[in-house]
Image 1 (cartoon, rainbow, N blue to C red):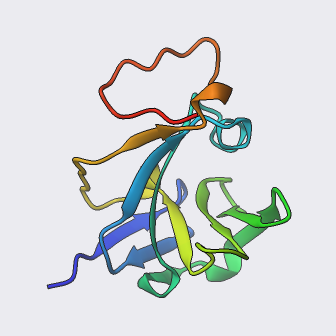
Image 2: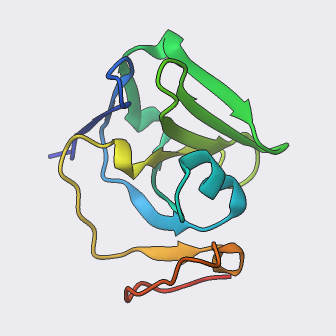
Length: 133
């Protein structure tokens, strides 16, 4: 049986479903992720693009190209950060889901912190997950 997870933005205008278990769970500390989430880091999990299905509000999703190869997507009504993806390269067929927008319970035994060299100086990582520069 395939795992199915539902998610939505803060205001509920955008609803989505992912039809696979998110992989490559990461807590990104780069300045772009910190700014887009307004937090010490952003937590994402990735799925194949074909496993993401927009159930409601597809026309209410706005996109921002934060670099030449990265597209960030968010709800135009409430501003919730929803997805990011690459438009070229090895992972262009994957999309990363902002895990905080999941409405279905999700747990994972394998996670990692990335871009820790860019982490906010006021935040100290205190968990046991691996860290990558």
